[in-house]
Image 1 (cartoon, rainbow, N blue to C red):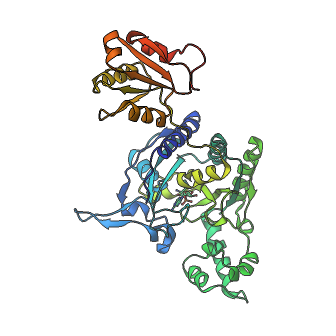
Image 2: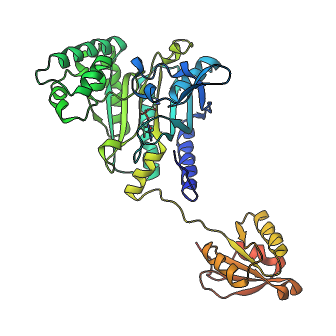
Image 3: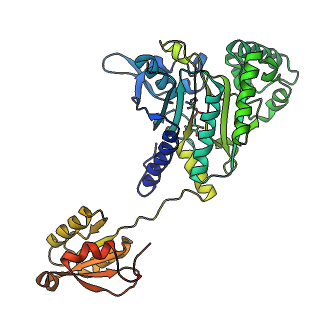
Length: 412
Ligand code: HAM
């Protein structure tokens, strides 16, 4: 878990703002759900206690309830849908922290932020297309270019079940066998064996049956429609038959956005898919759903690698240097701020030299200097910090002088 200090934190806020603008341009409204939920809300994330459900921060609260810090938001969205029964399609976006007890490393934290969107209640492959295209648009809005979108379909639940059985049979009888870890994974969830990066598993994985051969006609048609929609919008993608994703609620479409600028271990910036059936499992009506979530922490690392969406230098309009005790600076900064300008000041009644140092460090466009002479004359000294001429300005004209500088001494 990390502290995010200024000015980096300002970048996080801008990230949310850009995401909100993209989501709201497509009619999504912000949903805010609690960070702490009943443990049962997350029961479907990993069948057999696998993956995300194994990493949950769960505990019994003072009232004896089993609760967990959310490891992701999709389950909470479905819980909220089941509870409030909004009109459909319910299009929501969200942003906030999630918690997983993982082994921390660069790009993998125990508290991490996600932004995401979900559409619940209408079953149409054009929604898969909309959701994927919005994620793609968001990455572009950040300035990222080295992004690969991979897509796959897990088929209908029955297709998936038949495929899992075929995979189990394949891996159990594969002559060269599997690593010890994958043999254990195989007992719980054969699909996850496809995720293994271990060299000794690669021969068996390469020879494994393909999910597409198990797609029912309806599932195949759905996947075709999604691909045709993406092509029509000019969204580049690669079909990856071995993509399975780490959550167990997925049905039909799944996808992932990878950064080619990051190491392959941590290169998934975000992903998502369909989770038809999840709302019903959480006590709601039968309802399909599709959405994605992007990791903010990891996406910002990708931005750093590509040199885009950088921290902006902090710019103040004015830094007030008051050598009369500090009360004048209080009045002047208040007047500047009331006029919509940004202003800071020296504190602690420091010397002129010390305060000018602070003014320099603040990277303000102007130092506004006031001593006893200026108080007596009703003026202030305005000094452009980029080296222009300093001038004496009547107090009443200060705001206008900083809002509309004369000459070319304005910082931009
Ligand atoms: P997920 O793949 O578990 O999917 O997480 C989405 C993204 O969150 C990942 O691609 C990654 O960028 C980020 N992430 C996950 N775990 C960590 C971590 N420990 N540290 C840093 N970043 C992390 C979901 O969470 C699904 N709810 C996505 C979804 C929405 N599916 C349908 N709708």
